[in-house]
Amino acid sequence: MSTKLIFICTGNSARSIMGEIAANTLTENKFIGFSAGSHPIGEINDAALDIARDINYPLDKLESKNLSHFINNKEYSFDIGITVCDNAKESCPVFMNCSKILHWSYPDPAKVHDFQERKKELLRIYYDIGDKLNNL
Image (cartoon, rainbow, N blue to C red):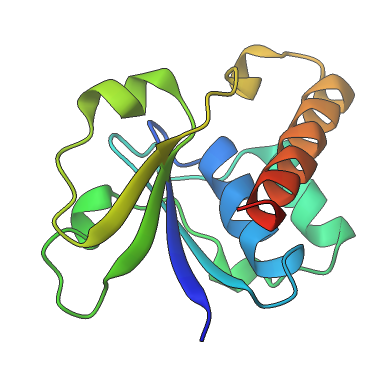
């Protein structure tokens, strides 16, 4: 049975999205990934969408959503919650539906203004998360 993960960052537009995609594509079905934000901005970062397109990840599965969608929802229970930004680590509530919480800090790629550089940073995050997951 696959381990269910939720990746959390503030905006749920880039880093946590990369975590969700990495869990669902780089781990040979070891994990099932989800993502959410403590203060989601409601849209996916353009470079993250471009990466999803490049690897043929179904775009209809990606949505910038609030963590409240998952908290205390009996439909969702996670084995591991992973915060991927320092703000999310500080502002996230205690997870009643996560057995374990991890923190993997990544810089905010939204601060990188050049599209190609932002995409390169997100690809680095994507592969780094995949490596970390495969070593859990």
